[in-house]
Image (cartoon, rainbow, N blue to C red; front, side, top):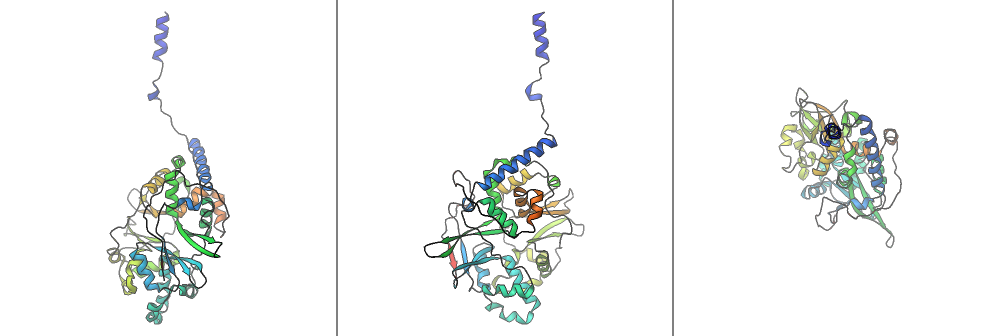
Length: 375
């Protein structure tokens, strides 16, 4: 009887490998909240300086430099932005980005009689261009390199910038020093490489309410580039999805693509169509990254860890354009609760902070090049 009882008990045991655990929505929500809290604490415990690689390249442009020469320098060094330095005041003068070249194009498009002066136009004249066309002023927000990374991110979000320079102050000589520039991509890659809690972000995009889905600006392969430039400026975006007549995503035209077209100060190529202009895109273009509304944030962060991307284009099962998720959208999601995100859109300043260590931190760059300054 005893043997029979034991045998019956053993037969009722369920092998552990046959047990399937299903994560409920409540568990996923709870783990995501914990993961976000952990990511924010991680950012508070690191400084902006911690994100920098062991060695890196920094190019600083003097505001007395001709706009035409500044463009050539950016293209020759395969960069799309650079800090500006005013040698007269010995102070940081803002960031030069592709948006500034778009402003110049807009200005001369509105004032064609001034086109003959374009070759003599210097970077310190960008302020006048901004005022003339009524656009946002050049990015001048910055943070000290040893401010907490969390606060640096908040200041970047509040300024609506895509990058933030690290500016130190030399007490002995009473002058500013441009240390480096942090981009949204570098910060997100830093988080993806060093914060395992990103694995807890298992909710799909459709449940996160991030990105832009309505009233998207688009163009076709036959759209003139100058019209795309006007869209980039009026919508204050860095890219325009290129679709066919059925709304199927074909490509993306980025603001940085314009730099190649106006290389050498030639502005006549702006009459080209998007299709013709894309043929001039550099061969090292990273490509267009797409996803669906069902893709999860943990998978997106893993993609950022492995590849260089600037945005995700959301498509449906037939490849039709549905929306756009920018790196700024992802950064806001990681740092802000929905209530905080709503209030941050009306703010324009960030806070101070500190603390952090570079120990056991992974980086993706190791290019050993001395800082360069152009005048």
